[in-house]
Each structure stands twice: as C-alpha cells, then as structure tokens.
Figure: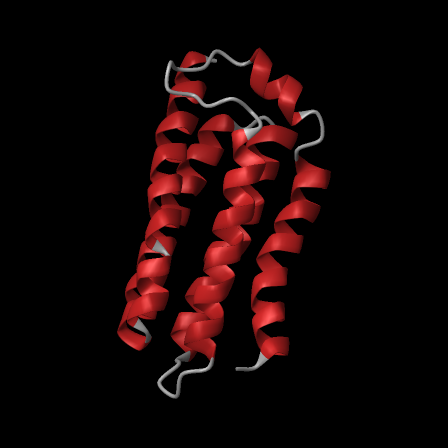
Length: 152
C-alpha cells in the first residue's frame, strides 16, 4: 500500500471541496434557507456531511485505480474532469446564482461521473462500485437543483 498516494487521492477531493465550499458557498446556508425548496429537500447541514463522505470514498476509488497496472489515462482524465465540474457547480449555484446553468452543468457532471464509474469498474471492480453512492447523490441533487431552479 502506498500511503502517500492514498493520502493524496483522498485529500485532493476532501480539501479541494472544503476550499471551494469556503469560497463559493459563503452565506450558502442563508441562500439555501431563502430558496423555495421541494418537500424532499434535506436540511443544509446534510450537505457538508454527505460530501465529506463521498469525497473520501471517491478518493479511495481513485487510489485503487491508480495503483493498477491497467490504469488508463482516460480514467484519470474522466476523474479529474468530473471533479473539476463538481467544484464548479458550487460557484454556479451559490456564488453566481445561475441555477439553470448549474442544473445543466450538473447533468454533464452526472454523465462524467457515470463514465468514470464504468471506466473504474473495468480497471477495479471495487473502485467502480465505490462510485455508485456518488452517482446516487448527484442524481438526487440534480432533481433538487431542478426543483429549486423551477421554484425560484
């Protein structure tokens, strides 16, 4: 086990997500609370908890793929691109108030996450399956984003 590589794989999404959260989602609790939300919208405290767990698991998945001999450049490119789109979404939705654009961007994000999961699965079954909760959460968030775009 390469502990440095594992730490890097986990810390990039976790710390990156925290930094983006601090910059892009300043006053996000107030913004979120002021939005007309659907009945299935969770309380605001759920999001940082869920994202910390998801970022950790996806970092572990990335690590598992990175140490395999059949690792490909396309798997790394897909992973890095979806992570970049993940970070961009917070700016679109909260900082810039572009809820419709955020919805479209999240649909693209979900597509890339799914492609990443398939690519990971072809390299390491556990890594691919580890991406499934992330797909589920972003699918839920896509519906939530659409509802808030429509209602506001």
